[in-house]
Image (cartoon, rainbow, N blue to C red; front, side):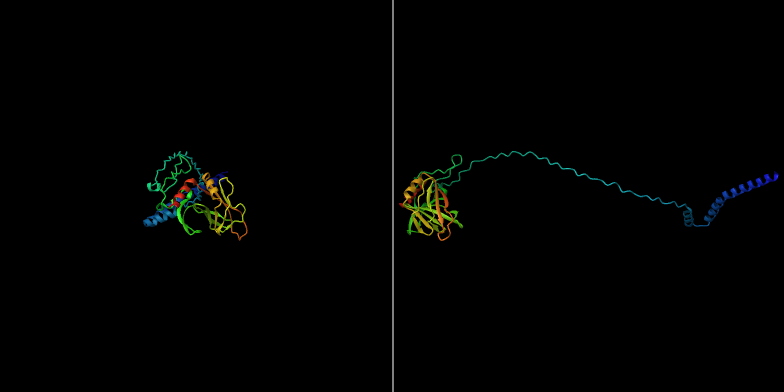
Length: 275
């Protein structure tokens, strides 16, 4: 029994000594390190201190990108502004007719407030060679020229050349009114073999041509008195002709002319012819 207790006491003593020696070892190491640093320079002491620091593991920090920003398109709303009412004020046209023009105009234009037609002035105008050519309404004119068929200077009423289609191409035609006849002159060759060739005044019956004077000129002489009477009561004159006699026939062409107040114009023609 006594031996057993002695053995136990010895074991406890040895265990206590071993634990004390384990605890004092780090202190001895620390003392040795301090003794080691006393002989070193400041830079060497700092380097040894850094080496003895515990190196901590670097945490792997993963930065997540910021969430994408979703940009919403804004709808642009365009408001229609109400349109402003614009008032148009029509000022009456000024009368810019020169005084000298009154002496040579048979029919001055009338303002829209009165009528859409042209009004003729009294036929008391003295016709002389000095005021020729005399302008008439609708592009007509009174003049004294050489009449090609007779070779003489004659007073005549002339229409403005008018464009038309002759069945094959574009062409022009004009009317010449003499004291005793009417002439039709065309840039295309005339073909009188077409039925119903002639002149129609308004809604009256057809007045036939007499004959071809040249391949481009045809006249009305026998029915001229009838034509004058009808023109005094109507403003519309229709020429009905075919063209190009040596070519295949196409169709009768109708070319319309307008003549306002033929009576007064014919009186002016008489005055001119008496000069």
